[in-house]
Amino acid sequence: MRADAAEVGASGSPASVSKAVGELEQQEIIRRERDPRRRHDRYVIDADALFRAWMASARQNTLLADFAHHGAQTLGPTSPAGMRLRDVGDFFDHVGQAMLRAAEQWRQTHATRQGQSLDCTGSERRADA
Image 1 (cartoon, rainbow, N blue to C red):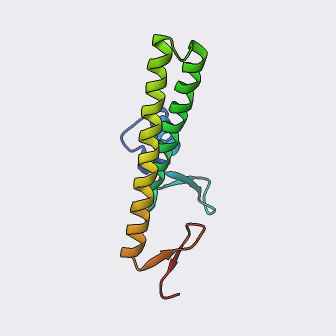
Image 2 (cartoon, rainbow, N blue to C red; image 1 turned 60 degrees about the vertical axis):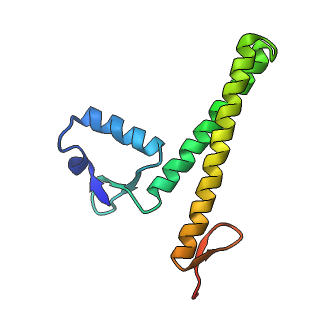
């Protein structure tokens, strides 16, 4: 799906559209393309948008885990706050890893259903190619 700013912002102020677009870009749900024929950006939601958003969320969980583990070390790993932060970090690390495994399983299943195989870099190629 492709849309320009006027289509995206048909029911909102330019500032609210800009904020929403920025948030969606950060989550990798949409991406911006420059229209070479006009001075406008086009916003694209392609087939891999949800996969990229899922992976961005997994990366966020990894960052949260790292911050929590660092905080636990700073506060002292045996202090009550340090132990809680360690548990929070362990939780986000577990969730992030589970998300990555689920994404890889989905990619493999999806590629098989589409008659494709993945090469060693994870790039898809047609089975009949």
